[in-house]
Structure formats: C-alpha cells, structure tokens
Amino acid sequence: MSRYFDHNATTPISAAARDAWLQASEKFWHNPSSLYPGAGAASRRLEDEREKLARLLGVDEEEDSGIIFTSGATEGNEATIAYFARTRPSTCCLISSIEHPSVDAPAARHFDNRVIKLPVTPEGIVSLPELEKALGRGNISLVSIMAANNETGVIQPFAEISALCRAKEVLFHCDAVQWFGKHTAADITAAADIVVGSAHKFGGPKGTGFLRTGPMARTLAMQTGGPQEHGRRAGTENLPGISAMVSSLEEASAKLSQWEGQAEQRDLLESTITSSLPGTIIVGKDSRRLPNTSMLIMPEGRNLKWLTRLGRMGFSVSTGSACSSGSADGSHVLSAMGLNTAEINRALRISSGIANDAGQWASLAAALQEVSRSMDQGTTSPGQSIL
Image (cartoon, rainbow, N blue to C red; front, side, top):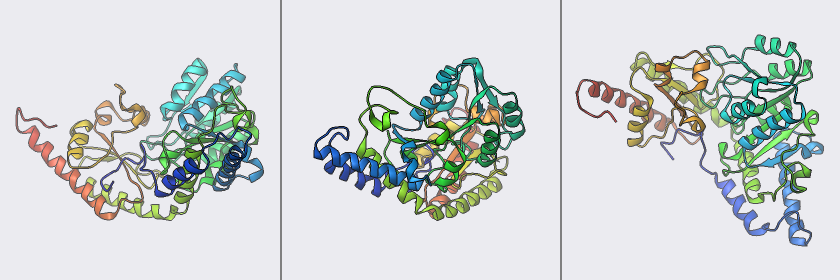
C-alpha cells in the first residue's frame, strides 16, 4: 500500500476492523431478530455497537435510535431523497452542483423538475447568498450538501448552511463520507439533521454504512419487510460488518492528529510540482480542504496517460470520483467550478492515508516529474506510443 494514493475512493481495511469482523462472525453469528439465547447475545452486541457509534458521533445515547445501519452512503442518500420526494410531493429539493452521483442521480429521479442546483464559486464552495435566496422562496423540504468534496477535497461551510436551513425550518441532509475518519465526527452531526457515512472510507469493510437522523427527521424510514432497525430498515443486520465499521471509526478517531502530517506533505508536493511543472493548477488551493486531497490540473497530456504511466511505476492515483469514472462528460465537479473540457481532461486526484509517509510523497513527486519528461519526449517522437 506504500504507493497507494486513492484513499478517497476506498481505504485498506484496518487491523481493528478485521479483528472485529472475525470476532463477530465467530461469536455473534446468530440472527439478532430471533428469540433464543444466542440470538439475544447478537442483538445485545448490535445495540452495543449502535451506542458506541452514537458516542463517536457525539450523539446523546438516548437518541441512538436515530442511527440506522445501512449498506453504505449510496443507500442512505437514495433513501433520504426518495423519502422526502414521496412524503412531500409538492416541495422542492436544493442540492449543490458538486454533489456525488449518489445524491445527484436520485434527486433528478425522485424530485424531477423540482430540483434546484446551487452554484459554487471557482474555489468550489457553495454560494451561501444563492442558498439563502433559494430558501427564501419557500416550498423547500430538503437541502442536500456534502461536507467535503470527494474530488477536490474542498470543505463546505456546513455550520453556516445549517444556520440558514434552521432559520427556515428546512432539513439539512449531508453526505459526510469524506469527513468521517479525517475530522471530528461530532462537528458534522451537530450541524446536519441527516448524515450518512460509509465504512470503507475510513478503514472499514465495503458494503456497510450508517445514516444518522436527528430529532426533526426521526420519521425517515428506508425499506419495509421486517421490524429491524426499529422498524426503519427491514433486513437482517450485517453484524460483523457493523462491528468492523464501528471499530475502524473508533481507531480512526483516535488518530485524527496524524492528518496534520498529510496536509504538510500534500502542500510540499503541490509546491514542488507547481515549481517544476509550470502551468500546473491546484484546484481549490485557497479553500479549506481535506488534509489528504490534491486535485491537480496537469500542464499537458490527458489524465488517462498520466494514470497509465504512474500505474506502471506502482502508483495508484485517480482522475476523480470512482463512481463517475466511466462518464463521457468528465467531472461535473470541475465543470461547476468553471474549468473547461481541456483542463478537466488533464485532472489527477491524489488522496492519501495517514500511512503515506514523507518518502512516499517524495517518490510520487519524483514520479510526476518523470512522467512529465516522458510526455515531452513522446510528443517529439512521431509514432511512439505515449501510454
């Protein structure tokens, strides 16, 4: 994993998560909804995990029933938007123009022409004046704005967003998958009425996540077919995955201070690359960003060529969101920030984990410089493949 720089897409499972998964699989394998002693032990373990997660999120334990265990953030986002479109059919939904496809697509599907997209500044921040203006028109049932963008790392002003929404008594839903494990969880759960998280973004297993609803959104229900999750999400709970997720978030929350080193190394890489490769653009450079994320617009060469060559050197980076990697239109996030098609086609996203040390960052900087030199040579040698 030493040359893995795509943590915003997914993270390697942590030792704590793996141990918790194995223990739960061996000791608590019964169905928590059954009535015999083994099932009762599994049910108690499930509620213990819910209480532990509530503490990690800074949620009062008396409100831990507001936590629903899910298969991940995509399910939580889809369910939230579908619920409000169904129960408040004449209202509108506000989303930002840089939302993840798991918010953007269900909003378009369920709210149809009742979706209002909020613009962002060239630095990737949602326009608060436009949000206030849109809220002022009334008839808004939900505002959905992410905590931090998965492509650029730009952090949204969610405390201010929350204040504007609460002044109009409109619920604020926040896709916080990139926030958890990198910053204090309670900051976002205090601001938003509905928050979703996904385990594999902070060292947990894939296919496991959570949705936390505050007191104003406690009626939100996800799927019928059984009494599980206090009647709000039917289906046998994935107790091993849940145990692993909570353990990984607990471990990540204890290591938050280590992200400061990642921010320092990221800034050093950006300084090195902008100096050595003139014309490189750092997207969102002047905004508050996640400490591990850098979106670079390279001065030449399509991003897939950079990706291929860096891959051959053992480095894993990306061109943006893994959920949009097949899109023919490129990044809607960068487009919303005002970048043109040519610039978007030269975008590379670097996203580290706390295990990426200074030597690995330096090696990545050197690799980027080497690929740039090979690009120059490739453009001067007709017929030579540059992949």
